[in-house]
Image (tube, rainbow, N blue to C red; front, side, top):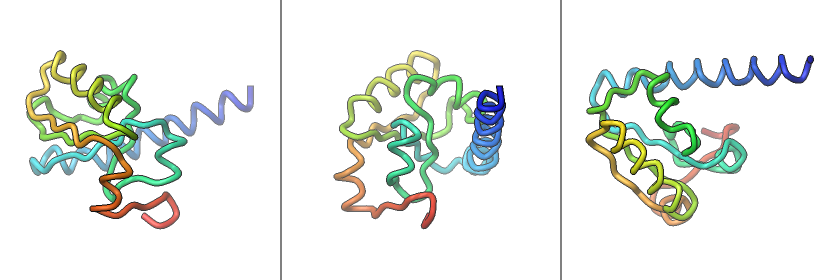
Length: 119
């Protein structure tokens, strides 16, 4: 029971952090950078400024974060496969401005990367 409570608390805090981070982007019309890999993959390294929204839950998480369907989104994963799936899901749900950036490793070489401790 304690583990379940801790997990729910962590999920609530994560959702709140996503809301706080995403809303200013959505309001300003800036592109929202989304890493659709797992939280574990995200923790090992991600692009600076990226939000973590696993691809299986991308439609729900963007809605919870208040990201509008006309907000420009840029998605990436490890190889481009999961970000492609997420792109298709978002398009099917009315999102209009989505770019699939492809794989993290190639992007990190160009843009740099960070972890939770240095981002």
